[in-house]
Amino acid sequence: MARNKPRVGATPRGCPPEPDHPTPAGPQAAKGGSPNWGQIAVQLPVSSRVRWRVRMEERIVLVFLFFCALVGILTTFAIVFILLSESLGFFRQVSLWEFLTGTRWAPLFNPKSFGVLPLVTGTLLTTLIAIAVAAPMGLVVAVYLSEYASHRMRGIIKPTLEVLAGIPTVVYGYFALTFVTPILQRFIPALEGFNALSAGLVMGIMILPTIASLSEDALSAVPNSLRYASLALGATRLQTTWGVVVPAAMSGISAAFLLGISRAVGETMIVAIAAGQQPTLTFNPLRAVETMTTYIVQIAMGDVPHGTLEYSTIFAVGLLLFVITLILNLVSEAFRTRYKEARL
Amino acid sequence: MSIAAVEAMRWRARERRRERIFQIVAATLVLFALTMLSVLLLKILLDGYARLGVSFLTEYASRRPEQAGIKAALVGSFYLMLLTAAFAVPIGVGAAIYLEEFARKSRWTRLIEINITNLAGVPSVIYGLLGLQVFVRTLAMERSLLAGACTMALLALPVIITAAREGLRAVPQSLREGSLALGATRWQTVRYAVLPVAMPTVLTGVILSLSRVVGETAPLLVVGAFAYIAALPNSLFAPFTVLPVQIYDWISRPQPGFHQNAAAGIIVLLALLLSMNAVAIYMRHRLSTRLL
Image 1: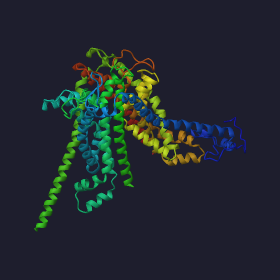
Image 2: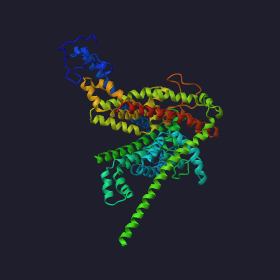
Image 3: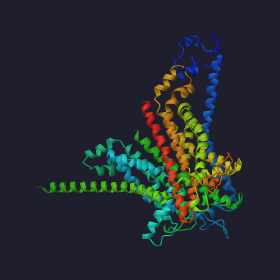
Image 4: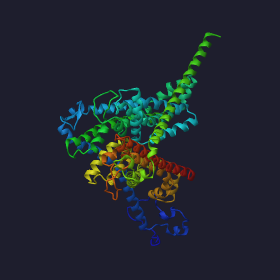
């Protein structure tokens, strides 16, 4: 700083007044320690060089930060571009109609067949089971948390949900395969070793925290005046909860359910481990099924040569998976904005 | 007593009963979730504790379950986490600073925000496909540690950005105003006034999102982490494996000995995640004592 002699009136051209006008001692003073007030007083009319440096730094940093923010946009573009361009080769040889309506998925065996429906039903089946577990449970837990639970119960439930949410999915997969399936087999002898049922049930436990905590947010956002009005009309707490609060929070709860469904559709490890890897067109939860995610992992791990039709199938399936989850997320987001706006 | 009074009493009794039933149902469901969690943890502990030991941590994967260990996987997980953090943390925190401190509310900013929300909802296996095509093939990184870390960095980015933004938002506005009033520029304000205060919260969020990276399996399977690695990765371009991939490999083998190994691996993985969370909680605690 010492070399910058004060040059009064040396304002560079094209330099509009800014909040940084005096720039007393730059970063050094703000960093802490005791600033030398005398020196600052002398330096008050900042030399153009300091000013230029500070402005340059400001600009460079801003450009860098902007690019950081841009990485997200680039990622989205890259995902869409790659899924589209890679599946284009696939759809040149297999018609979209055949892909979406065909009932046999056998890209590796002769005769080859590229009907994605078995993978879709596999995904649908496990997702339905998961949501059948997680939706009622999540809603009741959320209602309990927001309307009933004592401080102590909250202190137990919240950490439990957080821990459940933090467990890696491969661990859930292990649990489904080595614990849930054997127990279920005791009651249902027809249950296959790999099956949609236990994968779906465990997936339900996995998405429970998502649904419970998002629903609770929606319930807590309901203004108290609604509750008071209902109670003042003579309704009981239960009637108030289910007749007034839950309907008022419905858009937020729907958002939570949709996000849970989207999680279940995109979940890979639980189904890859416990649901099996055979594409079967079935709605029987006792049988082994293959989901879209499982198929992608299975082929990517195998040694299918790059550039072949078989290889490009994973991008076609990935595109379908991406589109499905994107729609679910967008609708969920729309619901969430609605309840946020409604609160105001 | 009049009929109406009797009716009212009945009604009240019925409603009270319903209320009790709901409370019992809710408590049962909560208990069920709690039991599931305990059973899960207990089952894994019982399955795996016998295999735990020093040799389990210091041996490479093997064809014989009794001799197999997680050395390569553990070290691989550690490297992957560090490398992912090196890519994702500067970019993520940078993006958060841009969105919170610099960007004006415009359609462009709104677009970036919506985009980040949506990226957070993209299934992780899709990130695997992205990494496979961009890093492994186009940029010719092959199935390397670097390709894995780049993929995981993209996956972690939305979470880190969201966490960092929350940290920045918690900094009181008066601090910024004070700094600007002293003549600091906007970047100087961020660098010397806002960031030091927000750092503990931001770091907490960063650690929590990295713990998600450590537990993630699917994208790494797609990008090509191998379970059989008999050497530690010695360069960025070396093949690698990570703990969840090793666990998955053991689970998918039929022999019960490997399942035992998988359970032991899970114990180590959970212990790792637990200690990362403990660090995060400690930092959050330090924040609350330091400021506000």
